[in-house]
Image (cartoon, rainbow over all chains, first blue to last red; front, side, top):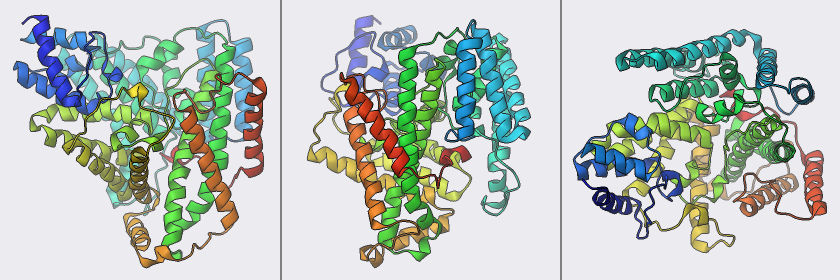
Length: 79
Length: 475
């Protein structure tokens, strides 16, 4: 799947989980920099992404995620 | 080991002078001094547990290396399991043996708890898991690793430092940084103020009431719960500020442990600002793996993980049932927020505004009382005592006049309340800064010095040494 298509779907999920109307997508953005993106919402986002893309993450892969770009690359490697 | 003692002040002065004048040339020399000083101080507190500390350090150093060197993931998993088993086994034996053998630590106290065991064991567990998850490389230098474990400013009560943050600092030579050292001194001064003036005066009211709650009416108990919450907060945040400040004197930055938690409007925000290093540890090593394995239960899985995580937080504090209820309540407080999430458009950095609106104030106030309620469980000696305490608070005697505990009076209590207001006002004004006495934005040196002198005077005139030991040193 193309990167832009993955970003589009992921962005919708992140907006929905974080209840954000405004969310400016930047590849280098980390979870700590996004208000409301804490351990709790992180796990909900991960579950929703798994359902949307019909993939399964491993905990080890999630621990290594640095920013939004790395999340997208990980999804792309699985779809 | 108490930071507030002439003996420690002398020890600190000697180590500081040796560190910057004699052992300053290489990182190795600096680390040798820090290691020896830390071990001497630990032995001074209780030499019998020095062997255990050395054993834990060596074991985790070599297990960490073995985990990294194992190409076979299964073998690595077994090594990690072995390491966790030993670390948790030691912790369980010393901290929880009495609980499992009798149901309450109050009945037997045969086993002394080694100083800082909960703090350094959690660091070591995190270290092994991070190596296994390939988040960090194992430390190759035993001297550096030993400093990570036994470093004296943090060994007694944290902050619980992630290896990823601490090891790179200790691995290189530190050069004297005047700005950092003076900033450390200011942070120590604020820590001394919150501990000696606020926490200890709050303790003068709260401690005798919690110890003999059946002798007091509900009004006194309610006031004691209020003062107890501030005692715990100012005691531990005071300790943390002193520890972080001392570490800055040696050119090493420790993690922030508190960030004005009483200005939180949700329980989620509160735990991001209260004992931050413990919350971060729990979220990373308990909540995340747990919620990951339960994620197919959706919100129910997340909620279950939160509750288990906070019961673990309660258990971490102690071996009594009231600590478990304390943790459970905090877990339960998350339920409404998880079930009915609100819209969220604010950026974290813009959330703090100088002027407080009524809606925000009422949320802060409500949350404060919820936390204060859990503090009754935290401060009581048993679950029975906590329920007795709560019964009286919710009885008609809450409207009767306050009975003052020994050595307190309406005037003294008023002064303590004034110091709490000063503390909260300072936190509110200084909120975006790294600590409350970070005064670089005040251009006038006279004003800055006046503030320092006022704090020193407050310590000398209103400080209390009746409850000088730090509450968290027993955890």
